[in-house]
Amino acid sequence: MLNYAEPLFRPPAEADSLIFQVARGCPHNTCRFCAMYKGVRYRVRPEGEVLAEMAAEGARQPDVRRIFLADGDVMALPYKRLRAMLEALNRAFPLLSRVNLYANGSSIQAKSDAELEDLRRLKLSTLYVGLETGDDDLLRALDKRETAAGMTTAVQRAQSAGLRCSVMVLLGLGGSEGSERHADRTAVVLNRMQPRLLSALRFVDVPGTAMPAGFKPVSEHGVIVEMIRMLRGLELEKTVFRANHTSNPIPLEGRLPRDRDALVAGLEALLPGLDRVGPGDLPMFL
Image (tube, rainbow, N blue to C red):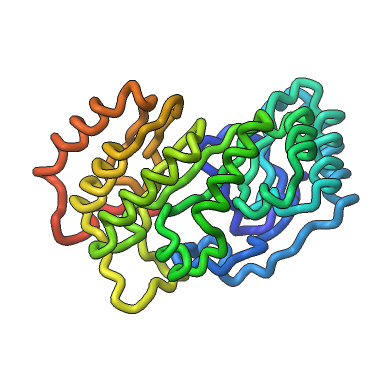
């Protein structure tokens, strides 16, 4: 049986993937806007235990094609550990097509170009990278120990090695006062990155977050205005865009640049009916 310890998180796109929890918690866990692993002590599971679990699960489910490695920033594990796990997965699952995981800019940067290419040959496929914002001042204020420039280089290097990067941004992260700057600077950084996949999630101040004093949340109306502003600033050449996380006021999907104008027009049509004061209706689970 698979050995899971809650909480266990995965991107929406990994709903049908087999998940191996190869580490528990997040090796960084300082971001003030993130409540995912607060209270969880980071621990890498013993290598032999994980490899045995992969072999056993391969015997039970040999036809599995998609695998997700949890928890937060599995890319931070040493190259040799990642290589050993990918080799084990290729042995255990003969039909394996892709292995995906969360990654930070610094954890990608810690790998050489040759190492990134080797991991790709072993079917590492999509790296989910949390840019959150292109505003370095905001990144510092929220204790995310990355820079926009560093994450940009990381995404460029990973994609040059044949990996796909699914870059995530957080709408509303700058609050009502920093909304325009957040949207504008994020669009500039995304244009430099040129991610293959782009996901927009909405920041919701839930228990476990610790936003700076004076932070004023963006209303439901303001979040859509911010998304429109960001979309208008994007000059992406070939990117799949999704805003289908349950935190978003409405689900959205399209290809950029082809669908940008249609997405913007659809969002503008919604504005009159949105809450201008509060967050609107929030889902029970985020």
